[in-house]
Image (cartoon, rainbow, N blue to C red; front, side, top):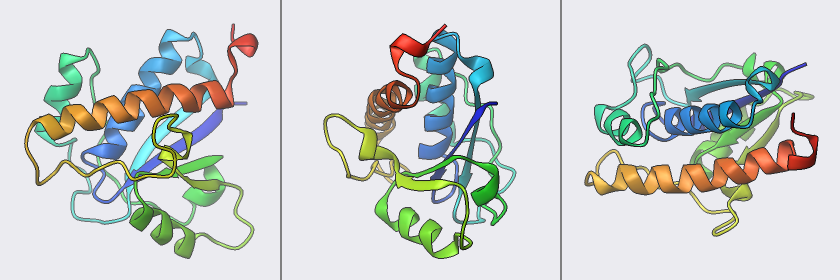
Length: 159
């Protein structure tokens, strides 16, 4: 049975699609594609149906990662569909915790709880900043996604 992971930010056009794309790439490289169902969503509804921000897509493409998801909003059903729901910042974490149905199966956590360099901190939102902010987010997301993958599937259990 696949491990289901949902990455969540505010609008689902920068940070969470980047985390989805990076984690998918890492799972593919580790030969674990079939071990995961990976998705992303936003707590807000502003960008439903949109592709990731063009600046984030360009930054990811420079690293050989294609971001192909379309923005969607988190639903109450997600809390029973996914095993892990990982928020990109504390504000989204609080929003998710408030909307989680009682007894939901998903573990709702801050994504950077897994970051070996800065556990418990926010992934900065690059939307209103300069282009280098998108590269910084990809650096953070890549490091944290690697640590998350190691936590969920230690190397000794990989194919």
